Image (tube, rainbow over all chains, first blue to last red; front, side):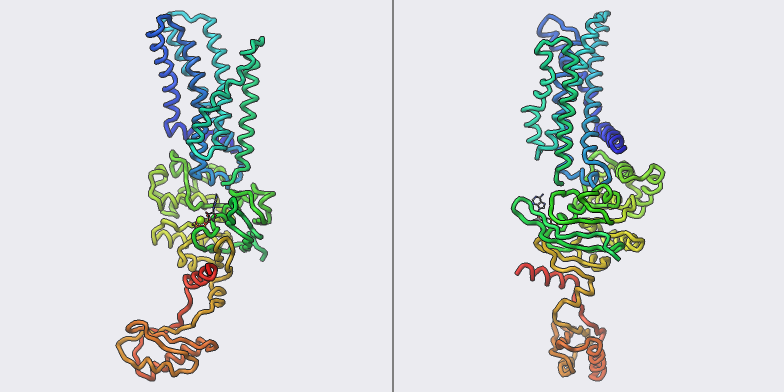
Length: 221
Length: 314
Ligand SMILES: Nc1ncnc2c1ncn2[C@@H]1O[C@H](COP(=O)(O)OP(=O)(O)OP(=O)(O)O)[C@@H](O)[C@H]1O
Ligand SMILES: [Mg+2]
């Protein structure tokens, strides 16, 4: 199954180009910094678990979208794909593998950041309120589904943008904001909003990915 | 034998610019087809169309009995391709690139374990197997490009300027590899600006200019149709003016000495070449001229090329 092979390949690429280190160490470190900054300024200390979730959801999505867009534009313009496209695989597999590779990497980074938050809370206060944990778990689930939307947007922007610069502009214009769309049920205050949010996010991400794959299929190299 | 690759009336424009118009080429199985033409003539565009990288074009492409627009995947199973400027992801090592591309072309792990070292050895890349491609020299990167094209032993090799950046010894090795593959039935389409290399390996040659095919044929056919002054070159040892008397020979239209020690004997239109050479040899012997060599000047592919291209320019 070429998609699986390509997926594994991408992960190896992230590992070898040190993307993973920067993600998995960087995101928790940023969350830590936020904690100490907010502790210093506000006086009222927020639970670290919560701060981690907030940081991850605001940064993780942009990160995922930028990564995918830049990756794809860069490799497209360097004609790296030519050697893949002339082999007996479906074109969209390249795009789908990239999507999942970045998603998995960012998702793991997010989970690590939130986990570090929970551990730090436990270490400093000695207690870990069950409500706080379930809040964190729920916000992580929401965050992860929003990151999926950002990934979809990143892939689409990567496929349509002629240059890295245009890609960066598009991500900042819309790539991140678009991940807010699944939050509509939450904003409307629907009961069980989280479930709708996750479902909506997954559907939206799939639609973006499908559109990107279709455009990639028709692309001239 | 019917053609393995058939290109029919390929026409492609970029915006308003016509890059190819009505290009038709047939390549037989096991044939090495050399594709030459000036920069921007449309060689790469032709190759991108037949590898499926460019999918919007007019015309028809059939490879191994498959129609490109209907069976791209089947054609991709037959194909090995070297792009004009081959590029790999920065993080890849030679080994990793070949593993990935080999698997995507349908090779098993066991096959790869045997073929990767063999192919690298063949191309003189044995030492750099575990190096990052981004750290290799230009010529070596080009060879990694060749390795990925050859690894899965494709039925059709499409090579866009495979000799660019290769040193003379590597060019020779590469030509031997291609000749060996073709002898075993691999069909090869390659473009090049190094006409002597094309002359060395190509069974047939196509000349393209401004998106149109100017001429297709074997080197012999191209030479035969090439209407230029036929000339016998005589290399003299020692200086003597007796050579001027060669102009009196039957079928000779004139004799010149472009430089000391070289005499050119121009033949009349219907003079038989072998007879003329005989006559010249007999004449110099009779005149007591000491010679180091006598031969018919054949048009080189360079001359033929320039002729067709300048025709196209005018
Ligand atoms: N993507 C593109 N968009 C616009 N024009 C293009 C594109 N690709 C090729 N062309 C144009 O088509 C023409 C043919 O280009 P092509 O690359 O096929 O030439 P070539 O024969 O391979 O030349 P070279 O020997 O320099 O490699 C050129 O004029 C080129 O500018
Ligand atoms: Mg070219």
